[in-house]
Image 1 (cartoon, rainbow, N blue to C red):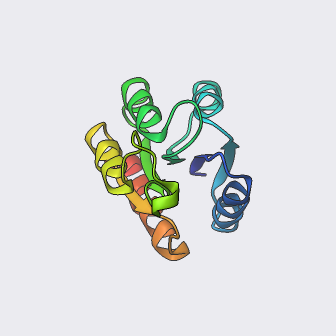
Image 2 (cartoon, one colour):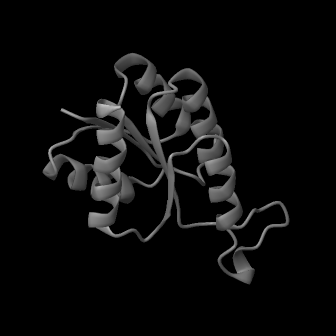
Length: 136
């Protein structure tokens, strides 16, 4: 069974993603932040990691980099729905979502997606990435 580790600081997103992947026949673990996710990955391994990019502590770019260094064969999908969305949310140090996702790709993420995501697109991407991994 293909294993997936979901790392997201938003509980609602973790619940939805876990449900999607469990129903699709994946073995699923969840973590609420990057450190917890890395610890779970070190303990149990995973074929695929899906991580949010904007989280307290280590962001998804750092997590993707760490995973790529320690687990070069693990597939990584980085997703984001945050960043400079509206002027009221603007912080001078903030980076736009597209820049975050580009950074994630640069450090080794296999795929980047934005929230809200299409359930079937996400599942197909997960299946395609893990099929390449197990067959090549």
